[in-house]
Image (cartoon, rainbow, N blue to C red; front, top):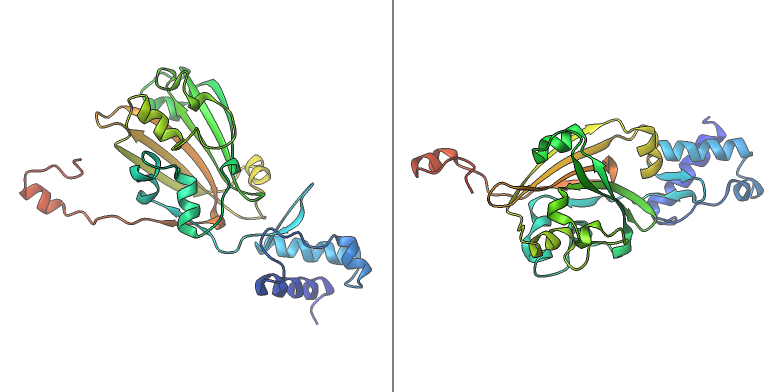
Amino acid sequence: MAPKWRELADKLARRIKSGEYEPGQQLPHIRELVEEGEGSKSTVHAAYKALEAEGLVTSSRGHGTVVRQQSPLKRLGIARYDKAKWRDGDEVAFIADRVASGRAYRRGEQTQTVSLVEAPPVVAAAHGLPVGAEVYARARLVKESEQPTHTLTSYYRPEHVEGTRLVDPTPGPAGRGGGFRVLYDAGYEIDHMKEEICARVPTPDEVKLLQLPPGEPVVELHRTTYTADGTVVEFAIGVHSASRFAWEYDFKVPDSAAQKADGEAPGAK
């Protein structure tokens, strides 16, 4: 026979998967299940830890044990940066992901801190600056309801953003259209970007901040954003909970042979 904690974990897992316990809903307190005869305190605690290890719930001080969103968000590739979304509308990147996923959102689900810092080596290299040069760091934490999904820190040269909404720490995007619209209005229209991603083990601080279950990796994103003349106007580092996103890319397949025949350099804009 399976141990009591395993039986309880399986019972709760069935309720979660059937929708009886919905994403974002807090499971009963341990003492409530003990009083209902589901087992001892240690039995219920072990069952909750098993559910957390299986990625069905998260546990944290002040929030208790909460059911995780099981269907991942679409993390759009090219489409999330469509100029029509932010230049002509108000659909900033994280909102574009929510819309594509059919999920609700609030602008205040993005919070940020802004500070003038010495550029770390990877940031300095991206911007072509000496290590230690001052840059603005705009660090965001994005949540879905109360569940953190990812962090994103954008680094800017002071001369590009000084006096703009990008140095305002008010929660939510930097006004209508967000940061790319701010750069556009300042004369720095984004033209192309490069994204690099890799999976890795999270740091203890990231586990706490993103409320990650045991053993879950993160996906780190490096995004470099350029104007048409090649000026880097933003370098960003994102850390995403691996299970909370499904990365989606839709693009035209290149034909470098045809480009060479036409006299165009591969990858030319």
